[in-house]
Picture 1 (cartoon, rainbow, N blue to C red):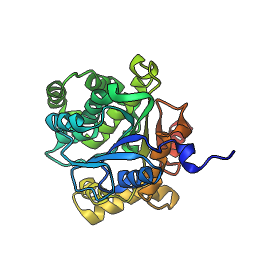
Picture 2 (tube, rainbow, N blue to C red; picture 1 turned 90 degrees about the horizontal axis):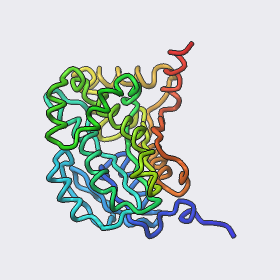
Picture 3 (spheres, helix red, strand yellow; picture 1 turned 90 degrees about the vertical axis):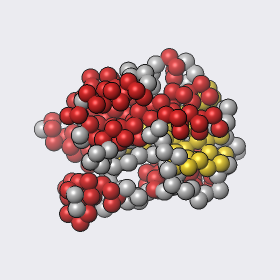
Picture 4 (cartoon, rainbow, N blue to C red; picture 1 turned 120 degrees about the vertical axis):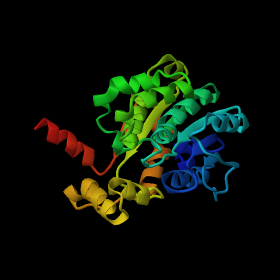
Length: 278
């Protein structure tokens, strides 16, 4: 007997939590999850205009905010998607770290006891986290920080790393995914931990990335296009070209995959890797 699409993905009737769902990749993912029959609980700094079970408007760089939201989420969660993020901004280096990495680590570990056996945790990292191996020692130091206060003190003591704040935050996230997927708290309950690493994608952050690249929107946009599209005369991705694969890796379709940081960049990082080897 043939299976329908809901059976294949396995989200129908399941409880799913997703952050960053007001726009971009996460919004595309949330829309697909709803279409697949999931009960979606969503959060974002901005207003969420989707037919979710409940929407939370919140700054996810703050421990007390994360704690408050976690108190309101369901006791059992089948899949967790952490998709919120921000571009690098001068003067906001530590906030970038907290939004893009440490707050996500904190939320994952706070909610982990409520993720069901055989559940999944999926994150949006970035091509910006490429070469995480070069700073793995420093990333592990941050990973071992037990509290927000400890992490902030570490960041304050390492300005040379967080000045390129977006890249280091994503390198930490990639390291976390790789280093934790095979630890007992995940393998013991068969909870999968993965991330996608998007390339240049048209989202609400596109203009922010352009401005922070050079300080000017137009020249910054040209610089970003040259880095990510120039070598193959390509195009930016659409949000659903990231959001849909994210939904897939958190589903039954990828039930045997964990510990992966998957680059969805039309082969760009593959070409970078080859260039360093030949």
